[in-house]
Every structure is written in C-alpha cells, then in structure tokens.
Length: 183
Image (cartoon, rainbow, N blue to C red; front, top):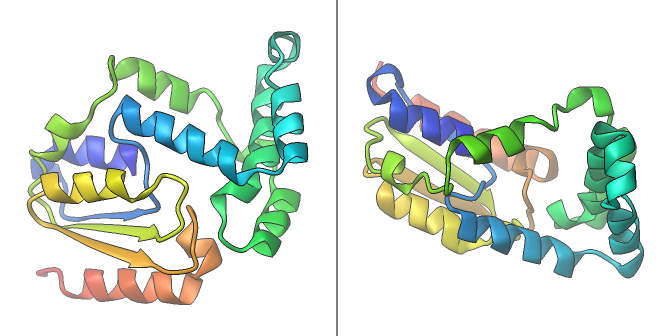
C-alpha cells in the first residue's frame, strides 16, 4: 500500500487506478500503532522467539535471517484465523523477501509522512483492508479522507492479508472495482 500510494502521489498523471490490499502506515505514528498491535496479538512464546532474533549479535551475524525469523515468529499477528497464520508461517521462504526495502523506504521518506502525496492522487483508488488488520482502522480511514477519489472497503474476519484469508471476497471486490473503471 505504502509504495503504491507514494508512487501514485508522485506520478499522479501516470497512474490509471490503484488497488491496495491491506494497510500500510502512512505516517511514523501509524507505524508505531502497527508495532504495538503486533505485540498485543502474539503469544508469550512468539514474542520470546521474535525478541531472540532482535538480539544485536544475531542481527550482526546474519541480518536477513534475523529479519526473516522475526517475521515468521510474528506471522500470527497478521491473521484473524490462527490456522491460516500457522500455515503461512510454515510456507514462508526467506528467498521471497528483501528485508532491506522497508528500512530504505522509511529512510528515504525522512520523517515518514506520505499524507501530502495522498492529497495529490487523482486516479481512482480502492483501499481494501481486513477489519482485523493489525494496522488498525484509523490509518486507512485517514488515507481515505485524503484521497479524493478513493473507495474504502473492509472485509470482516480478516487480518492484514485479505487475499490469503478471504480470497473469494477479496477478488470479487477487486474485480468489481476494476470493472467500473472507464475504458
């Protein structure tokens, strides 16, 4: 969501439409909410494993592995359905991730606040989010209020990855949105 909206706000004339699935923090304050919600949704064992991989010596020895293991330990927080979270955690592959991208993006954005860019988006935008997304609702609601031509849709019983938890409903909403775009 963050990268797509930042791009659409920077190159508004080059974007026909934007579809976001799940929410990303639009300011550093919302990034803190995301982290707090993650911690409250994890079991003590999951927090222990996540914190084990936060140790500076493990980070220094292999930062990609440490980041991957923290992600795997925190997977449950991203889902409404714990069984789907456990399935996802077992399927994670470190080769599928570039853990240098999020820190680089946050650093490039300075104080990290993409709200001014959201105000410049002219293309239609679908903001699709699980009702139980650990990003919370305030973040995506503020994004919706700043993007003139946006549609906000929540999916119940769904966390941060609607395409995995509620795929039929997700793709129907996306399909309906895309079908109404001018040709």
